[in-house]
Structure formats: structure tokens, C-alpha cells
Amino acid sequence: MNIHRETTIQLPEPFYELLERQLAAINIQEFNIVTFNFHDPDYSAEEGGYHPVEINLYRHGDSWQLNYFTDFAYCGGPFPELEKEMDVQFRQQEVYNSFFGRCYLSHADHLIRQFIENFCSYVDMEVYRVQVSVD
Figure (cartoon, rainbow, N blue to C red):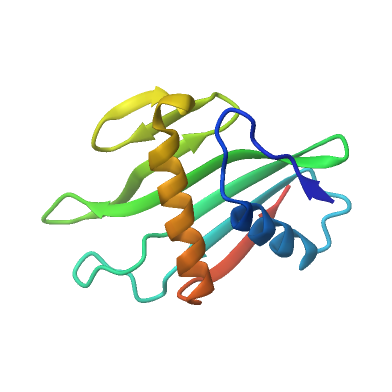
């Protein structure tokens, strides 16, 4: 099953290929929603590391659609918590970033592509463990 390519912004093809490989690794025949959680087991507020990323897809006809791509980071003190740093909502066509707030997806295309290209590089470096949830 393939993943629908976004038309509002052009995302890197390796991102779609990564998601298609992840989907192929699980039996998704009877599910309509899949969430991938990529996490660096060594990431901490004190030492840093690679931010956790959550990607949600939903089935639409014969293909999968991107729902959201969320990057988390530790924020605050003296007791930091994981918070959304970048939240790309494909269905709503908007982006939230902790530095500039909300804007339309099309207004942040360069930033989103850069985030996703970096994410794909980190996956290639094998820094993440992946957990899959299905509904």
C-alpha cells in the first residue's frame, strides 16, 4: 500500500520511502490508523540527543495519508518535560513551532522539509528505536 504524496508542500522522497518500509514491516490489513514513535533511548533533558518524533498515518481508500509529524523536546526547568517543538498537521494544513507559533503549512515549507530531511538522516544513522501503535 502506498502513501499519498503531499501536494501543499513537497516533502523529500526518502521520507515517503521510510514510511512505506515501516508499513511493509507490519501487518496493517485490518487497521485504519498507524502511529510510529521514533525515540533515541539516550535522549534526556541533561544530556540532549535526538528528539523523539511521532508520525501518524490514516487509511484513505487504497492509500495512506499523513495526519501529523510531531517533534518533541525537553523544555522548562527545574523539572523539564517533553513538549511539542514542531507539530505539522497535514490534515489541518498548519504548523506549530515553539519559536514562532502557528502558521499555514505552505508558509513553513522550507522549515518542514529541513526538519524531515534531518529526521531521515537520523533514521539512516540508526539512532532511533521505533514503536508502532495501530487502531
